[in-house]
Length: 393
Length: 162
Image 1: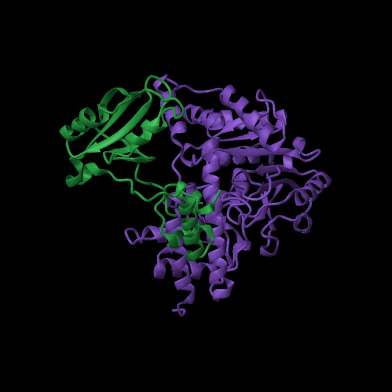
Image 2 (image 1 turned 60 degrees about the vertical axis):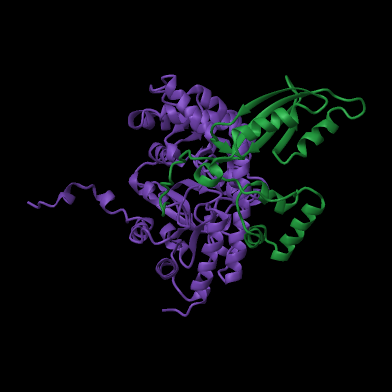
C-alpha cells in the first residue's frame, strides 16, 4: 500500500491547477527588502475608514460577540436592501431575499453549490477572477469559458456568449466591472446579454463588487433589466468600495426560493458571517459614503495617470471604466506576459501579474493594480518605461 | 474647482512635477495654475506639517490657545479689533467664534513667560478687549489631518493577491 498522504486528497481537488497568482506571489516574496513596488495586489491601499473601524470596536465593547441569524443581522439586511434599491434600482425584501456572507467568494460558492448538479455547465467570461473556474470544478460542474477581447475593452458581448454556448449550460457568472481587465458592459450590451439569458433560460450570478468604482457613466446591474431579477443572484460586498477586504463580508440578493437554497448550504457550513464585521458593515452603509467618494476620486486620477503612461510607453491599454485594474497589452515588447512580468520584477523591481493567471484569454496582457499612491505609481511607470526601452536580455 | 487646488487639498506632498503627472498637465501648466491661485489670493503660502516634538531645538516652543472677549464696534463689528490682534507675530491663527467668547487666538512663543507676557502686556491691554482666557497646549495628537506618533498599523497588505 502507498504511504503517500496525497492518496487521501480527492481527485477533483488534486486536479485543480495551482493558481498562477501563487507562483508569482512566491517570486515576489523572494525579493523581500529590495524596494519592490507592487502593482500586483487585488485590494485597496486605503485602510478601512476610521468610523467603520470604531463601530466594530464599539460593537465589541457592547458585547456583540454572538452568532447572528443565518441570513445576517436584520438591521444590516435592511440597510443592504435600501442601498441596492437606491443604487441599482432592484428591490429585495430584507426578510427573505438577502443573505449576508463571508465575502462575495462565499456567496459565489454557495450559489454554485445550491444551483449546480454534477455535470451542469456554467458559463463565465475570461479573463476573470482566479477563483471562478476552480469554484465551478469544486461543485463537479463544468466551466464554459467565454472570451472577452481587448478590441471590445474586455466587455462581454452577446455574440461571444452565443458562440460559446452549448447544450447543458445552466448558469452564467458575470463580474462587471471585471477583475482583472476593468472591462464592463454598458446598458445596451447588458440588454443583449439579458435577452440571451432569457432565451437560453440561464440563471445569472452577477458579481458587482467593483460597481462603486465606476468612473464614467452609471453602473447598470443586469438584475435591474426587465425579467432579469427573477433569474439573477445579485452579489456584492464591502471589500472594494469601503476598503474592507480583511473583514470578509459580502451578500447575495435574489428570489426568495433561491436565497433559501443558498441559506441551507450557508447554515450548515458557515452558520453566519462574523457579527463584528456585520456591525462594521452597517456603519459603512449608513455613514461611509463620504469616504467612498473620496477614495473613488483618487482611484479615478490614478487610473488616468497609469493608462496615459502605459500608452505613452507603448503598452496599449484601454481605459477601464471601473475597478482599480489596468490590463495593458505587452505584445509590442515582443515578450510573453510571463517573461514581461518576471523580467520587470527582476530588472526594475515592479510587480505586475501575468494576464494568463486569469485564464488563457489573458495571454499577452498583464494586470497592474493602481490602488497605490501617486508617488509610487509615477516611479513604477518610469521603471516600466526603462524596462520596455532597455534591450532585451 | 481648480484641479491643482484639489490635489493640494488632499494634503499629500507632491512636487510640481508629480502634480503634473497626476493631473495630466505639463509642469508649466501646473506652475501657471499655482500662480493663478496666488494671484487670486487663494494660495497664500506653504507650510509643512511638522511633529516638532521630535526636533529638540524647536520642541521648546510653547503654544497656547486664547479665548478672547471683545466689544464689537458700530460699523465694523469685530473686524477691526480682530485684524489688529491678528497682526502680532506671536499670533499664528485667529478666528471669530460663535458661543461664549468672540475670538479664538492661537499663539506661540519661545517660553511660557514670553507667551504670558504677550497676553498680559499686549493682548489684554488693547482697548476693546474685555477678557482673555489662556490655555497652554501640552501635547499634539493630530495636526491638520496628520496623526502624530499614533501608530497606524504598518501595512500588512500582501504584495501579490488575487
